[in-house]
Length: 351
Image (cartoon, rainbow, N blue to C red; front, side):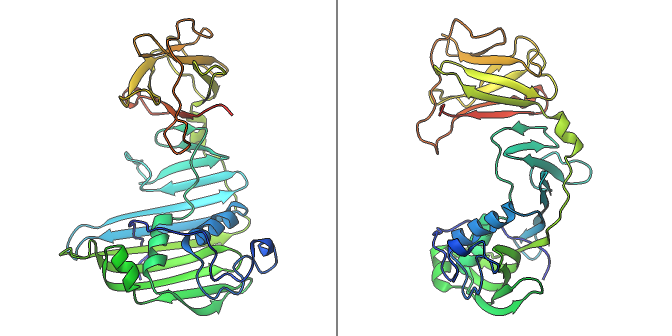
């Protein structure tokens, strides 16, 4: 089977760790949280444990996918390699951003929760979780495949091999799929992570579609242990701007925490819960350099403005931050028309 990967929708998942004989209290034991695994855990529990295990270890993983809508049509493929160690996590992938460099891959550096992109030099202090595995794809594989344990392998640790050559018809109907062929092999390490997945699926979606799509996916944790990860050179090109809501809620307080200066007239976009338009522009009146503080606020004309000379006196209203955590918070970023989009700040309620 080719080293490829399919990306499809995700069905509901539950958190129960079905099929796992060891409890969470035993997860630090010598055999691991998936010791003597007879059946696959529920999808969410499997992926949660996979990430928890890799969060505590250094590793390298490789992931590839291909989706081919027809036998003669054009195919779409993506790939990524992740190196994660004590110094941080470096992701190289060909599907993270447009305008790829000459080597065809975009690099993104994660340290703590910060995310920095090689192409855009975006610094996001809140960051996003490094994509250790394609959760949507794995969820679909587990939900639609009739996976059964067929072997136990491994030299230094037990690895449980699950395979499937047929689909769960009820699950396929719920997902509106007509599966004509499926071949899946998964290796689950007793230590608590997915060591490899290899799958090929041919299906029509929706089920009454005239043309089926063949999608393929492969994921491997290729190294686990003493992995060296060095901070890439492009990290120094990122502008580090961090922000929070002021005590009275009237301004966004921005701190230039390092990196190049932001030139005067650099325009930002701004949005809060009371703004219906997705983009409202505000420009820096002067250069914004490392160590500087700026205040973003709303004027009486319901336009944003930026002050670099202390707290402004003509603030018209407070910022409206959504009360629900799942709603979008105040959002601030550099407009792409002015150059690389080098920073993103999302600000919620003060704790």
